[in-house]
Length: 149
Picture 1 (cartoon, rainbow, N blue to C red):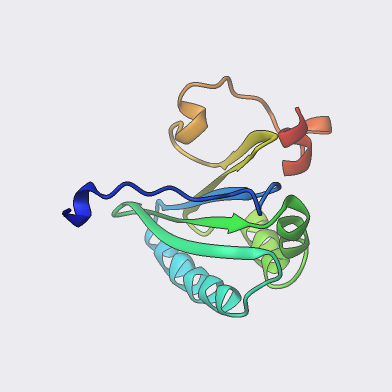
Picture 2: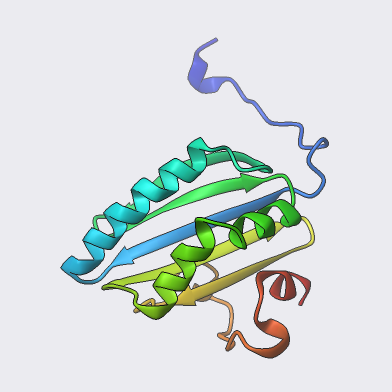
């Protein structure tokens, strides 16, 4: 039997709270390319440090100026712990103050729901291609709150 015709699947029963996160970074100015290169090195270092709960990480390329990653987390608590710790907290605060010619988005998927955030994206992408837009404030501000909505 040829390898191309072999069908496979995976048993996810050991991961009842699995979270899959897609992140995208779109460069809109030359300055954003420098920011992306710095962030890429930092993310690679964070992945090498193997944060608790990170099961796998893959780099993706959506286009010449649009790159991203897919991450698999054991559960939402592990992902939240990482996003509230260093170096992620510093990355997010720096981006919030100055996007440096770049745009950002993420989408998260769990067995209990899906959520997304898009920061400065010039056109809808992902879930934003078909779902109505909503301002992320109040009870819709955090990933956890959006997942529960």
